[in-house]
Image (cartoon, rainbow, N blue to C red; front, top):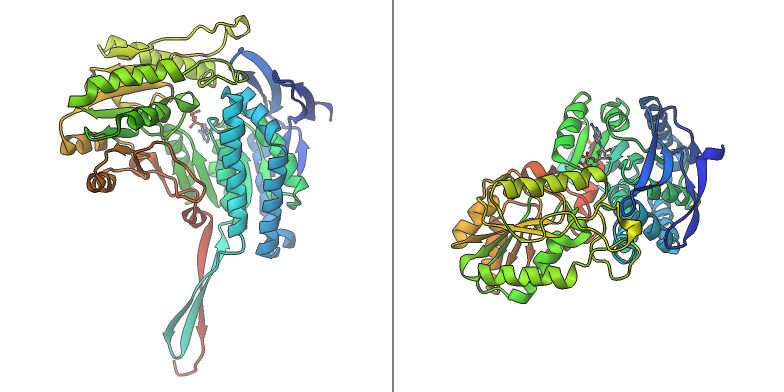
Length: 503
Ligand code: ADP
C-alpha cells in the first residue's frame, strides 16, 4: 500500500525509505486508528506521518506475538540459534549506523554526532551483549532426599508488552528487546509518539535477521490507547515500561487487573554531592555533563547538586565557565553542537514554565534562565533553551524537588556528610546518585548510604549494557541490563522427580 512507505531526505542529505505502518507478523500493515506526525524539533516542521494503533490493532499484534510464542519455530529454536539471530541483528544495525543516527537526531533533536557515537554504540552493544546470553541461561539441579530430587528450568515469561520513551529512541528499544529475545519471549513494542521513526526502520532488520513472524511486533501510538490496551490485555504476560512516574502508576493499575509481571523505570531527581576534598575540575566536568548532556532529557540526570559550603562559590564560577565553554547550542547537524533543541514544543513549554516558576519563587539565576534564540533563521522556531543554573532556593522548592527533564540544575550548599546524605535522600525518587571525593572510605560509605539504584563515584551517567540499571523508591521496580536484566524476562519452573517408591 502506497502510504506504508515514504521516501525521505534528511537535512544531512541521507535519503532512505521510511516505513510508516504497524509492524505485525513481519509485515507493515495500516492501522485502523489515527496517525502521528513526527516533528523536527530544530525547525518545528513535520518529518513524516505514521500509523497509530487502535486497541483493535494492539489485539492483532498481541495475538501475533502469542501465536509466535507457541509456534515451533520460536519456542523450539535452539537458544544458540536465537543468539545467532540476535548477533546478526547487531551486525545489521552496525551496517546501518549512520542511517539510524540520522533518524534519531532528526526525530529527537539530539546532535547527530552524539546519536552516531553514543546512542548507536549503546544500542548495538546491547543487542550483541544479550545475543551471548541466549544460550547461557539455565536452571539448577537440587538434591533433596534419596527418594527425590528436583531441577529447575528457566523459561520465557511469554508475551511481553514494552512501552518506551523518546529520549534515546533506538537504545531504549534495544534495552527492552535484548533481554526479552535472549530469554525467548515474544514482544509487542510501543515506541514513544514523539519519536516513532527509527523503530520502524529497525523492524526491517528484524525480518532480515531471520526472526520468525510475530516474534517482534512494533506499534506506534500516543500511549493512552495502545499503551493502555497492552497493559490491560489478558494475553500479555508482562509489561516493561520506561517513562514518567505518573504514567507508571497508570500502567501498574491497569496491569493489576491480570496480575501482570512488571518492570518500571521511571523518573528521578538524582543528587550529586561534591565534598571539599574533591578534584574540582573533574567534579565540574562531570556534573555539567550529568545534567546538560542529551538536553537534560535523561531520567538519571544529576539535577540536584549539593556542594560543600566552603567551595560552593568557586564551584558555581567554574560550572558557569563550563557552560560558556562547552554548551554550544545548535541544531542536530552542526558538528560543534553540544545541546540541541528539546524534543517537543510541549516539553519546551514545560521546562520554560519550571524556569519561570523558580524565578517567581525567588531562586537565584546563576546562568541562563530562558529560551535560546538560534543564530540561523531556519531554526528560529526550534525548541531551544538556555542551560540554566539556579541556587539560593530551599530544598523544599518545586525546582529542587520535581523532575524538570531539561537543561536545568539546582546547586545548593551542604555543611557536612550527614547533612549531605540526609538531603540527598529527602526525595520520593531513587534512580542515580553521584559522589565526588578523593577519600576512598567516604566514597564507599556515601555510596552505600544513598537511596538509589546506581551510584557514580567521581563521575556521572556511566551506563553500560553489562551493568544493572534501575531505581528504588518511586524511580522504578526491577532492573534492566546486565545479568540482572534476564531476571525480568524469565521465570523459574521447578520439576519434582520421584525416584523411590517408599513414600
Ligand atoms: P513523557 O512524559 O516523558 O513523555 P510518558 O510516561 O508520558 O513520558 O511516556 C512514556 C511512554 O509511555 C510513551 O511511549 C507513551 O506513549 C506511553 N504512555 C503514555 N501514557 C500511557 C498510558 N496511559 N498507558 C500506557 N502507556 C502510556
